Each structure stands twice: as structure tokens, then as C-alpha cells.
Length: 270
Image (tube, rainbow, N blue to C red; front, top):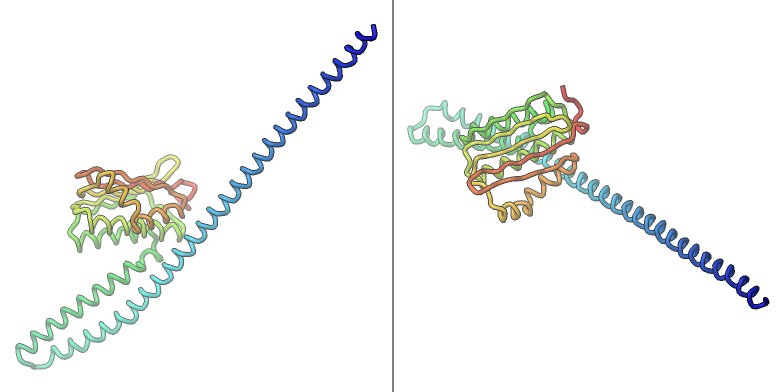
């Protein structure tokens, strides 16, 4: 009888011990899960802070570059451009004086060279800081840029926008620099005869589509392009305006670039 009573007393103690161990194990597991979640949350917060810092740093760098561009453009326009214009006036006065034919020919050649220098100076200043961008926005500035490229380089440039979009100043500048870099790449490397630039509104996003009919690229060349300084600049500016970038190309099929900007990022769509 005493032996049976001892067994009856021991069994509940064992059960209590097992339950206690299970509860302790459960508590350890819960603690570990909570700790892991807090750790992951802290890591996400740190990554978010690092991303925000990197974005702020990129914005500051690009802003500093644009300030320098503006300074150089102003110096070219107001400084060098004014001096060249004054020189042209002096040369034009010499041309009205009776001189020998050789002298007149020299004056004519000098005027032509000064005119070329003035035109090139204006072109450089415009590329650095187009006045139409600040006054009328990116659509007007891109229209003028495409017309100038068509006139100077003999390419067939098609520019179309389905709506009169309104962007922020930051978006205006970023989009202009992106397209400017794409145009420069086409002029330098693509051997294209036609360029197409379209702004198209879709239900939730604006698509900016750029393409040319140049020699195109194979996957290896696309990879090399993506690591270049010019393309990195494009990627940076696309990220700064919260957009996405897609590049497709095949050898002999030109290049197609699509920049997608969420509709919520656009000030006005009419």
C-alpha cells in the first residue's frame, strides 16, 4: 500500500516537471522568435537609413554638379560669348574698309571662324544648362533638343507626348539629363539614322520610351554598358525620381529603353 502511494505521488511530480520543461522550452522559442524579429527590424531600419543616406548623398552630388554646370554655362555665355561677339563686331568694321582682295578674304575667313566659335559656345552653354528647361519644362526642352540634333546631325528624330505632363523641377532636370545621355550614346556609338522618344500614359504609370535603329548590342555589350559611367548616371537619376529602368537590345536591332514613373510621382496629368 505504501509502495502504490509513492508511485501515485511521483507521477504528478514527473508530469509537472515535463510540463515545466515544455513551458520553459516554449518560452525560449518565443523569446528567440521575438529577438529575431527585433533584430531583423533593426537591420531593416539600418538598411533604410543607409539607403536614405545614399540617396541624400547622390542628390547632393548631382545638385553640386548642376550648380557647377550652371556656373560654367553662365561664364561661357556672359564671358566668352560676349568677347567673341565683340570680336565679330570689330572684324565686321574692318570688312567695310577698302583693302586688298587677300585682306578681304582673310577678314571673311576670320568672321566665319568667329561665327563658328560663337555657335559652338552657345551650344555648349545650352547643353550645360538649357534655358527652356527652367522656363518651360522638360517637354519643351526635349522638343528643342531633338530638333537641334535632327538639324545638326541629320538624324530622323521623332518626339511625341500624348499629354502635357507637368513635373517637379527635380524630375524635369533628371529626365532631361537621362534623355540627353541616351542621345549622346546613340550619336557616338549606335550609327543610327532614326531616334524615337515617346511619353505615354498608362493606367498606373508614365512610360518614357526611347529607341534607335542603330547597330544594337549583344548581352555582353549590354552588361559592359551597364557598368559605364554614363549609364550609371542614368540609373542614379532614374532612382532619384523613384522610377524604374529597362534596357533591351539585339545585334542589328537597335536599342530600346523604357523609364517607368508611377503616376503618383507626377504633379499633373491633364
